[in-house]
Image (cartoon, rainbow, N blue to C red; front, side, top):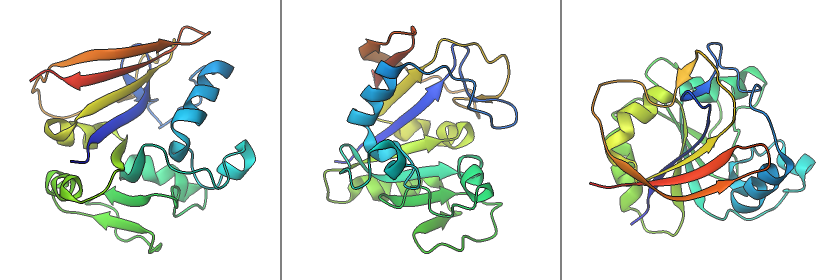
Length: 192
């Protein structure tokens, strides 16, 4: 069965973006950037892939991406209606009136039902939960893996990695890679 993986950048204090959606405060390290490009090339937006040597690079892990409106909106604001054209794209939103790009499917229904349908499909590719925190909070019962790129910075405020109901769910770390700037990529899986 296909898995739902929440692959996201996060600050030390648990924020995936600043209060205004900022994410440019994460410090970069060349070894981390190279690892992420090599292992997760499909998570780089289609319009920047040619500029970073990934034009035509095959998808390694994911074939589908889920986004909330807050994650999708910056692409729209930049004039990009299909940010991950090399993946099947779903935007979960009840407030977005329509999406003009046929490569992106707008979903206003319960995201749990959508994820269960996607997981039941045949195929080798997993489903990437790209963000945001509200959608991650709604999908918490269906998340099979957390891939947290933890950057060595405190945001202080912003968009939390999970937002919504208080419902603890235990996860255990199964692998942690540490990079030259002290940032990490930790894989967690549910323990129950």
